[in-house]
Length: 387
Image (cartoon, rainbow, N blue to C red; front, side):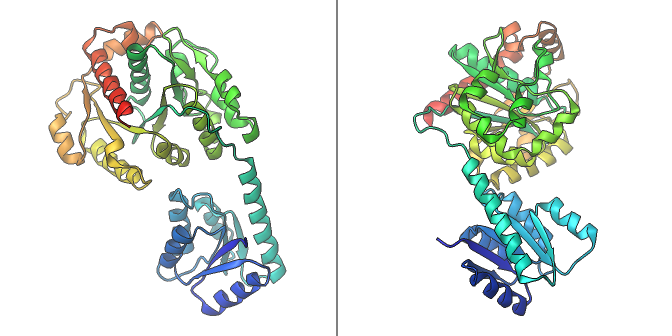
């Protein structure tokens, strides 16, 4: 079957000439004359490559590229920007928004054909590198924990949800901190070697096997199986290894009945890919106006990834006793989404847990906050049984 190329240009003559040129090379051509039409055809037709003009009246090529990269259906589709803009800054902007290659007009047909062939060949190579999970592998229940910004307690909550699940089920529970360069679990749980995630992200895709992922897990004395992220700031650059994260998460899903993923804060590209792979998305927030407004935006972005709102669980984490914290009812009203659990402030509990290198649920199971985590785990188990 001929490879399909979407050509986008508001200049009809250019659109026709480029289309004919590529058709003669055996490609199937889809044409669009503006940005809006380009997005519709890209999402609907699923081309193998997009040849995109930058200067268009309704929506420029940079914005089109941003939207294509944001949508899971086109996030990996190769984009060749084709424009009369020759400034270095224009090219840099193109690459920053997600373009794979850049050509300036006018260009010789041979040069265009060479770039098109190279991009399509590169994409074909990536596809052959993809690792598929064996059909016989059991898929466990995946939980992604995230927040709009750092410091809201994502790691602490992910850890104690995992511990509460283990307390209830006494079966394999994986806790994976997928935040390279920002790892804290190793220090909190008394484990010095935090290189496992870094080694996986630095490997080739072919090397990320189920066996390798399994060997990367560390068994903690709490009973949890941990995949630890490095605390070395240099490793933050590994967040660009999006495909590695996807393969890793697929393997994790086959290794335990429940896996809790600490996705940190914000919505980087790898988190956009991982969240739809999860059965349940937990968002952590605090009861302040700014956090609520940002979380509302985060919910909108997550649902735009074709995630159903009912799979999103909100946990209100009141970390400090303060009159500035809103009540659960007020938070729900302002957020426009139900709050499933509200954690009472317990700084002493978590401080003591860190001292003994154990989750609070394990170190002080009778504590009121620990019991709140148990209730959260019970709700997760109930959802898993109902799926």
